[in-house]
Image: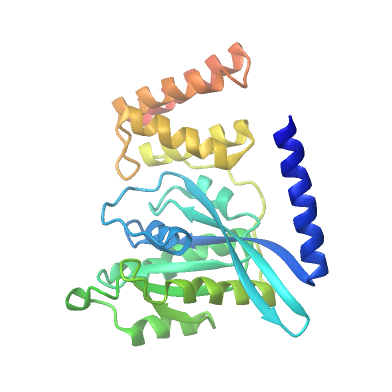
Length: 293
C-alpha cells in the first residue's frame, strides 16, 4: 500500500513541477499501417528502444507502444506522448483494423523500398480503408529499408509523387541503421499537434462483415474477442499468446490451428464471461471455422 502512496505522491510532485516549468502534456493516438514485413514493428522498436532485430515476426492484431517527444515553442515546452498502434499488415482483416483505426489523429504510411507492390498497396488498400474510419488525418509516408540499396525497387521520386497526392511529407528510412527513424516520428508529432486535416466524410456506421474464407473468420474471432474483453491492448496480448500456442498463421490460417486457438481463447474468456456465454461463443466460432475451412 505504501508503494502506491509513494507513486501517487511522486506523480503529484511531477505534475506540479511540469506546471511550474510551463510544460504542456498532450497524448495522441497514431498508427503505423502498411503491408506485412515492411518494417513497421522494427521502426517502433528502433524509435522506442533504439534496438533492431533481423528476425521477422508477424504482428497479430495490434501492438501498442508509447513514447514521449519534447517540442519547444514560444509558449513553452510540449511533451507529446505518442500512443503508437502497430497494425496487422495482412490485407483482409478489415474488422479488427477498422476497430484499431478509431480515434487515431495521425498515421505513418510505411512501404518497403525493395518491394514495389507495397507502395501501390498504400493507395489501393490501406489509405482508403483508413479514411473510411477516421477521414483525412495527417499522414507521413515512409519508404523503409533504404540501407538495401542494391535491392531497391521504389525510387525516392516515386515515393514523393505518391505522398504529394495526399499533400503529405515523406522520408526514406532504415530501422537497421536508424536513418531518419526519429525524424519520421518527430514530423508526425508536429503534424498531429498542428491539427492539420481537411473535412472528409467518414463512414462510422456499423457494417456487417461478409465472410467468405478463413481470413474473414479469423478477423471476426479477433474482433469479437476484443469487443467482449473491453480493453483492446490487453485482449490483443491474449490473442497473440493463444494464437502462437495454437500455431495460427494469420497470413494463411488453417482449420486445425484455428480450432485449437478458439479452444484456448474460450479458456481465457472463462475469466470474464459466464459459462453459457463462453460455450455459445465457442460453438459459433467452431461452426464458422468448419463452414469455411
